[in-house]
Image (cartoon, rainbow, N blue to C red; front, side):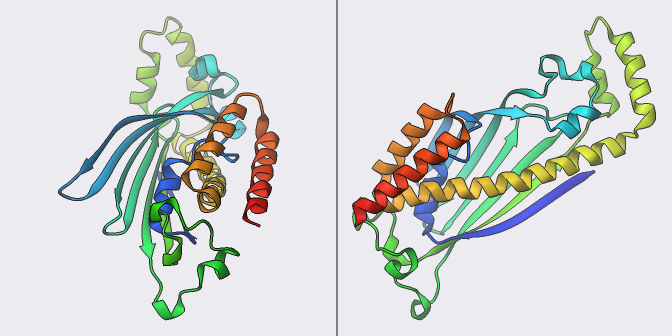
Length: 279
């Protein structure tokens, strides 16, 4: 069984700014679990005028308590407490000329327990000229006119994003269990424990429970993701790329031991300082 979660959102910023914020979004005060980001490949296709990027994110991960209670201890290995690190593969394509960006992110660990694939499509929205609000009315101030026109604040464009998360649990399938048992010295003992475990829960019921828990986490993660994007967009608006990169540097210094409270205090302090600079 497969579950889906779909959400839509509109950023009051043009697509060039939103796409730039997407690539600068880690770290931020709402993504304290992201440890590192590496660019695997990036190339620009002159024929299609599209930018293609593949990145790998390393994140702290923790299996939900609900899921931990459902899993036999033998399958967790060193992550018996549910804590660990996991990689997420991200692919993206940006077409600024046509006004869209598509992304796909998928987990590389625990895919047998729960595979999560997030797909997003960002599209440019340009209201009729008669209905366009002035930039200073929408944001409270016009922002810096510089940054080489990259952010295009005066265009008064919005960017809409549709996010679809696909969750699929294959836990309990014979092929998966066979692969887990292969080479295990205590396979016979584990088989007996797993047989007793599955006698009280059907495979389908387990999968549905895991997927339902995943949907709840995905919904909460999307809220934090939007907040994190807004932090980066605000930094770009008030100080351009320089302030956004400086914010990333400060956030990275706090990622190890600062904690979420410290992150948000630093973000608020930086925001207040930026507002003061704008007068």
